[in-house]
Length: 393
Image 1 (cartoon, rainbow, N blue to C red):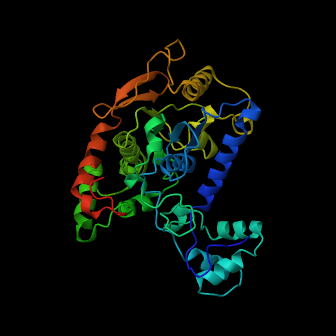
Image 2 (cartoon, rainbow, N blue to C red; image 1 turned 135 degrees about the vertical axis):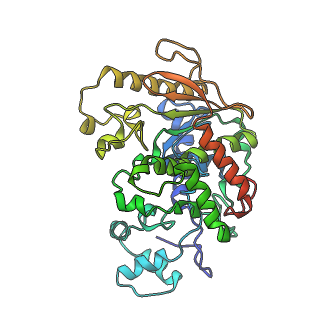
Image 3 (cartoon, rainbow, N blue to C red; image 1 turned 90 degrees about the horizontal axis):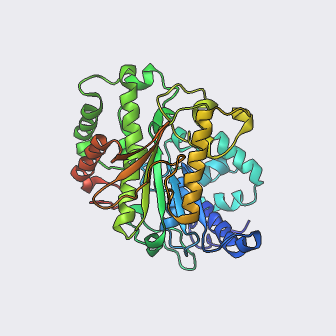
């Protein structure tokens, strides 16, 4: 595998995975008509890292490669999407394969000669690709430095980017109602007793304000009670809000600010027999946790079996119809019906309706709005201490 951008440089361009996706999307544009598709009606959707990929493609410097986007639990404004690359990773990988070096260029040139399966296994064993385990950027996207002769994917933080692609691309964006119920599912009493709200450091350089900021958050979520297992649900709310819920609101508002005309918001709250991660990991949590909606969008007979309850079938029919309507018409509810009895309205700069996907479909206004109002104020109060030059955003 050649490394053409390493000559005379210590930096690789970055975002190779996202650029591979660009090649796939270009292939689709060039060949979709041969499969009966319409090159002017391409919709992309993804969940979690997939949702973040969709969001980043929407904002990237590349040409317009799709016409509608669905972002599920993956706003690119999330502090989970750490944008600072860990330049020690090539050295760690090389050293683990008994190639001793402290030079990034040497390490990269050596790794280019290693069997790809061996390299993936080593990265897995070292948990390099697991940002939650390593508390490091791992293999996440990064803000690229501009390099002559290299087509960059993104060269600024997503919340700073203004791209014309957004203006004519309808978007669905949302999350589940209990996102971090998965991340903290196995946490014990010791974890919660020592909980320090350290997630804040992913988005803020708070310096001398750290203690005041943490106290603001602590008092809002758990009052004067000490962090412990008794307030696990409140701590889970904090993590869900900080990593998924508020970033989703911020991204939806940002898309409007830079010219987006049609943005639909949703919250998936349904708890049935096909909630993906609750079933896969036997999680006992309220509502829907991260990725649970996938069990109603994509079939998995091995996990769920062939029998489907009437209630689950209704959610399958509703969710797949909403998504396919959006792909066909740019509107998930072009007409109301017994299946889809409510008209899903897009948000505006003055109102934020959202569709609550539960046993019944209902329209609400501003999900978790009390908690989101807290984070609006928090971001304003500490706006000058946000990372990545995001002051005021």
